[in-house]
Length: 227
Length: 227
DNA sequence: ACAAAAGTGTTTACTGTACACCCATGC
DNA sequence: GCATGGGTGTACAGTAAACACTTTTGT
Image 1 (spheres, each protein chain N blue to C red):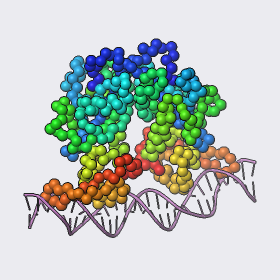
Image 2: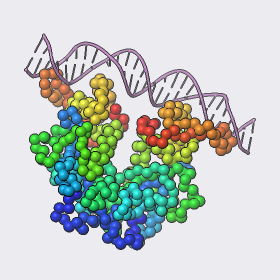
Image 3: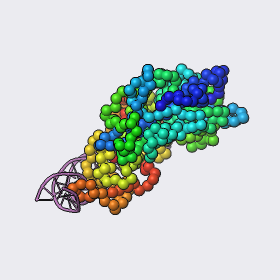
Image 4: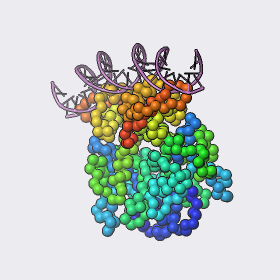
């Protein structure tokens, strides 16, 4: 197992560990990913990538990713889960780095365009450029996982504000799955699941009838068929 | 990102990397996991754990896990996928070891009780003892993932011989999900999916009508609702 | 002939889907 | 008063679930 056998222990400490995070949010009617600028000549100049950083000796991978999110993005993530560990020998041109990738969800409203740190931007998943390292793969994995989990959990809640209208909820599903649902059927189904409660507060935002605001009724992420 | 900043590079090579694998198989009407004996005084004496070992400098995590399966178990696995990376600071009493856990599926028939290496045994998932390290957690994660994936893929094929009867297939689902299905409904549904083909070979194994042998009709793991 | 597992259809209940109009508001 | 998005019900189709007997074999 983890016996050091005949190999010298120092030879086994060949890798640096890192974490990277695919942060998803919905804004302007699109599913977006948070990118940072990467400038590491000679390997990467004027390139983009997802945020990340090293794991320190006294940290778990999760500690590390939360620290980097806090330090580099400065936002609070509501949901994070481990995605996949990338260990290709040459994935980092500077040396062996094994990276544990995470995926995180934040409501669109929590990333204010005006207060975003300059080097951080949101990019529609339909227009992701060639990124540094294997970050395109990480985003791919993240999208896959997000779509799969939306089908049997209620994690979409973390892409929405605490109070939201049924149209906003429907729109979130439509944006991510890229198709539209019938309004009446959608409402019937989602309400029958019993996971929403009507806050009895109304949202007025235009020349039309106000919408009821709902919230998810339990903290846990209920697991069953959604759509 | 992966900049080494002010920290001395050697401080960042604090961890040893390892892989561990949860190997599932079905035998004697039960879902079982492959365990090995672990004897590493003073930390673990006469303990069990799942197979695993170190990642070497020129290997990816997947290379490593395949090598350990080959060397320590000596069987060919038909299906393997990455499960989760465990990075608790104190998960190994001897020092910092970060382990990438995998889960693998093998047909019951491929693990012959008589040729099993002495230190390897199959244990029903209902009777897993306290294991070394965080191996109980790994098995938990594996069971969770296995059940989830059976619902929308055809990976159950890797727990069965290439040719199998519909009763064997049904029984495999029943063992894993711990419930029974109606024979007529099961057959109707599974045949309508169009993923099986009748080999027109019959299996005779007792004082009863012979059963048709089926095989999966495509190599890929079709994704949709199964049961 | 009998025990043991294989194989086969129909009816009923439920769930998903298609579809169109009135409501409350701001301007 | 009109444009805008919010809110509501019903009929039909398709899928899931319940249910029992005949077939083929080995001994």
